[in-house]
Length: 326
Image (cartoon, rainbow, N blue to C red; front, side):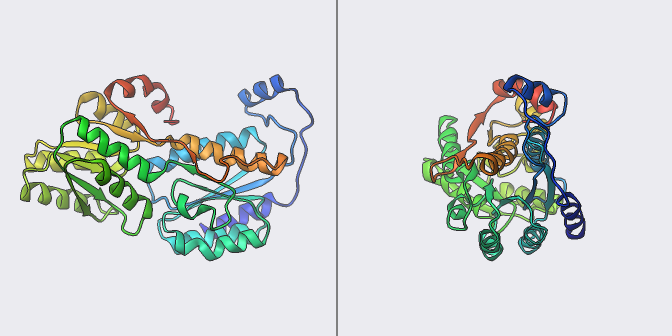
């Protein structure tokens, strides 16, 4: 992956071109036709995330980023790894190839601190997305785009209260992920019942199911399960059914499977942080900075969530979920 990223960056940075001026209405038509809607050079922006293989959430982030890149005449390069050191190496590759901008997620911020300092020294603008809002400005990023994980967690605790839940378990599938810890801490803060963290091996779904099933069997009083990613919600439902538990399963993030389960009643609610918007706005804001020195947020994160999605909202969003943008 690192070699591929370096090769693509190297090829794309060989030259730039201009597409000529366009009126505002012409930009819209060009975007619809899949052509660049701007006359700026063909800059290269690299996005490096902590996504694991098969994580549908990041497919939606990518979709937003690619569509913004097409509109903005950007060569978009993507790399990902759930190991922070490899993620840092991908960022270094982008620096070495003199990328015009970098988008990066900070699930494990400390591992990326040094390499982002190198990006700043090289004069490469950086925008952070999804995770690491607390460290974004400190590490030299222009802004952070995503939901505030603590606020999102608080929304979950409040929603659980509305539903009359008393005892919940928060399932953390990636140890060391600061955003996950913040979500569970936020939920505990506003939840009037009791909430316990359960750490599972997120790369092994059978193990996740077994761990949660054992927890539910050991404590029948658990009446709510909160998972921190859409791919883990169906596994939680399986664990609940196998344990004979009556607990409600709720989740962070939204995908087609979660939407179906919301509509069927298998899930209670989901917390949508609008990943398409995270990818789209990150690329668009880098373009705006390169073109016009614009920065959004005023020193604060640009929030894309949380939005509580229930069965009714899932039905309304179904069209967008099917096309992979929600």
